[in-house]
Length: 418
Image 1 (cartoon, rainbow, N blue to C red):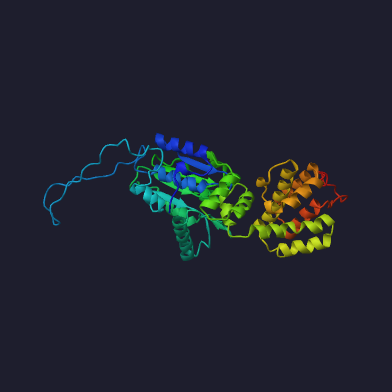
Image 2: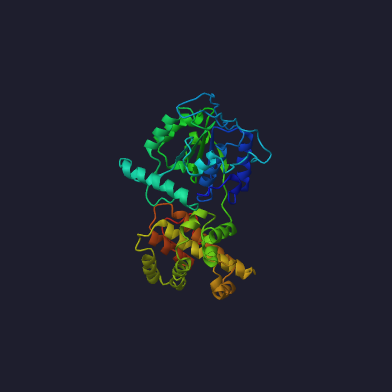
C-alpha cells in the first residue's frame, strides 16, 4: 500500500504543517482528536501521523539496537562484531515526517508495527468471534492493497469491546521497538459509553510512551470528558477541483463524470469514491424528471413517481440525499447562467440550453425559495422520515404547492413564505 505521508495530505495544508511541527519537536500531547466532515482525510492523516511518529529518523526515536558480539568461537563459527550506527548524514530526512524507507515506516504502512494499535468499527455480532475477526482482517487487507479504500457502514457498526479490553491490557507493557506507542481509534463516536469510561483513564494519563489519536465526523457524539482531554485538530472539506483531479488521476474516472461526482461529494473524497462506479447522469435524469409533474401541480402523478423512484420507501437515506442534491446542483447552474458564469463552470454542461432558458424565466428570489425548500428537506433526512414522502413534499413545494397552509396549528416559521 503506498501510504501517504504528512506532507502528502490532500487539501489539508494547515493540518500538515501543524502535525509536522509536532513530529519535528519530538514533544507529543497525550491525545489528539481529529474532527471534521466525513471523508476528508482524518483517518489517512492519523495513520500518516503514526507513521511519522514511529519513524527511525525523527527526533526522540529509539536508536536502532545493535549489539557487539564478543570475538569468541561459537557453535555457528566465529562471531562478527556488528558496527554501531553511523552519525546522521546531511542527506538524511529532515525529521518532521516519515522517511518511508526505514523498517518502522514499512511496518506502519503494512499495519504490522507492534507499537501501533489501530481500532475501527465494523459490522457483525460481538458473540460471533470468528466472523468478527474475519471482517477485521479483511478490512486491514483492503487498506494495505487499495490506497483509495473508504470505510462505509451499511449496517450498525461499532468498535468491539474485546478490542478495547485487549488494548488496555497491552498498554500495561513496555513498547516493543519504538520509543513511543501510537493508538489510532477511527470513528471513535461509534464506541459505547462503557468503552469510553474504560479508556478515559488511559487517555487522561497515558504515560510518556503512549499517544492517542482519535478521529470522528460526529463531534457531538463524543463525550465531553473525552473531548476535554484531547487536543483538537480540525479538518476542512475538500475543494471540488481537488476531488475531481483525484478521481481522474487515481481512480481513473472519466472527466465528465468526475466533474458531476465531485460536485455531489460535498467536499468528501470518500463519498465521491463510493459513487464513482454509479451512473451519475442516469440518476440526474431520473431526479430531474420529477420536476415535470411538480411544476404542473399534478400531485397524483408526482406521488406515484416519487414512490417508484424511492422503491416504495425502501431506498436508503443516502439515495434520497443524492436525489435532492441533483436538484440543488441544477439550481446552482441556473444561478450561474443567470449571472453570466461561463459554461465550463456548469455541472450539467450537457443541458446548457435548458439551463439558460430556465434562467431567463425564473428570477433569483424564486431560485432562493426553491433552494431553501431543498435544504430543509436535507436537514430532515437525519430524523425519523419516510423517503418517498419526504421527496414528494419537497418537490411539491418546489413546484409552488403550499402544503399545510391554513392547517391548525399554524406553522411558526411560515414555511411557505421563504
